[in-house]
Image 1 (cartoon, rainbow, N blue to C red):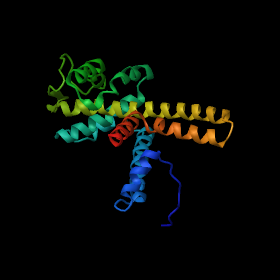
Image 2: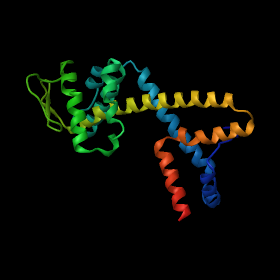
Image 3: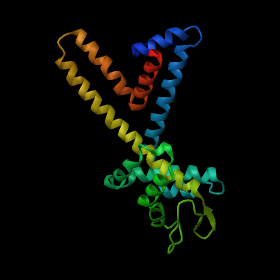
Image 4: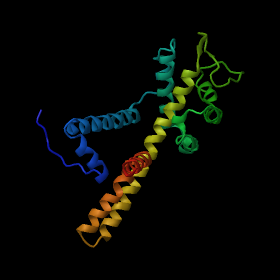
Length: 222
């Protein structure tokens, strides 16, 4: 495999830290692994968009006998639901994206009841009708009496969150690209362009990375 040389721009604070560790870390390898992970995530997302599998296909070809199998099936079905449902129906769940990683009980239950996954899946003929279930309660499936656990619920909600996160991030990046392009066109010289480019680095990195870098700068000043 022929290696290609590329130039990567990093913030000055990060560059200072890199100088301290340049003899102990292979930054080329670190960057390669990070980029590989991000590309794989995007490829999986695109693959999910392009796949023609339906929720029923996933259901019929999943192993629901274990919590792991239920979680995986739930996540795949949640992703497909978010991709295929009417946009307004899915957009209403964006409010849960920000705090999803915290897994707070009250927030999870509110999301669960707002979503009403049981009704969504009942319409596919997967569950027995005529009874409501609480988050985490075991639900009998069809005539098989296989109980679904909270693993499936969390997987289904997680699949929706994965889809919405990618959509939100894509919109955010596109907006930043347009804003940066507009500022670059108005720049008077190369110095101004370089300043604009530096100012957009933390914006493209995202809120979490920006906060982390800010915290690191505060630590260095102490």
